[in-house]
Image 1 (tube, helix red, strand yellow):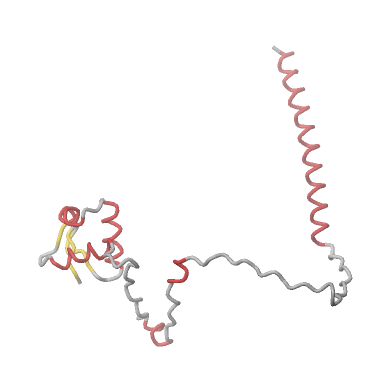
Image 2 (cartoon, helix red, strand yellow):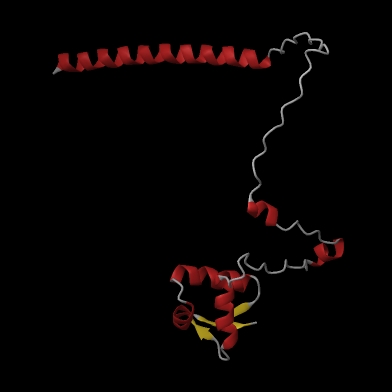
Length: 158
């Protein structure tokens, strides 16, 4: 039993020695890299261009711009008075690019049509949305001030 423990201690000691050597090597490599970064870059003498050596610069290829970035509305500036009052105008609701109604539009239409308010079960039936989608839409509409909760699970237009 004692010999086995001694053998285990020897192997652990060897492993620790190997690890310490690796750490020293890595720290040396890191010091070399830091020295290269802090050292000033050597300037190479500029070559003089002759008339025969001139070439026309190649055009750079640019990646096509994404559609979403192009459609993004510019940020609105608020006046000092509006910023003090906290009454900055809300951005206008964007129409979907395909002209179809969005999830928010469909939920808002159902809520607007109801006089006494509409509950979640009815919204699910009329819109055909999953509970997660419906929950997200109701949250966004209530944050925008378009609808409000009359009671728990019942929503009316504002």
